[in-house]
Image 1: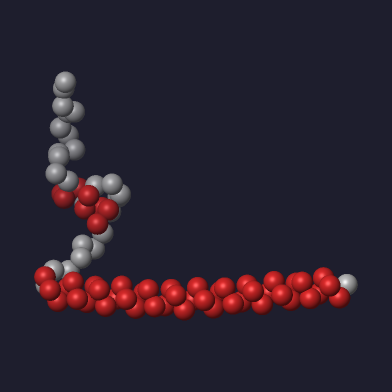
Image 2 (image 1 turned 90 degrees about the horizontal axis):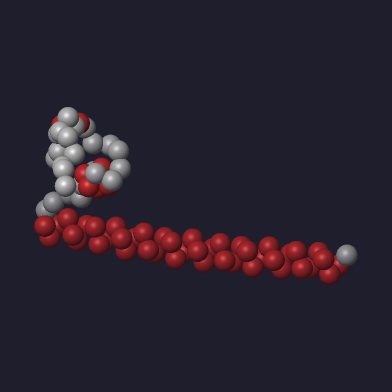
Length: 78
């Protein structure tokens, strides 16, 4: 029983170490992304699109007036 308790405690310690390391690495990468976004905005002055997938037409989210092809148009014939 002593070996099982030591094994489970060791696994818990390793899990907490990995969790802490992932949190630290994730925090630093988010910090770098924020700096890169600030630099990009200051260089070109343009804001990123609100919903890039909807603008490309691969996800719902745009209004009917934004579509590049009319809804009532028949499909092109080959």
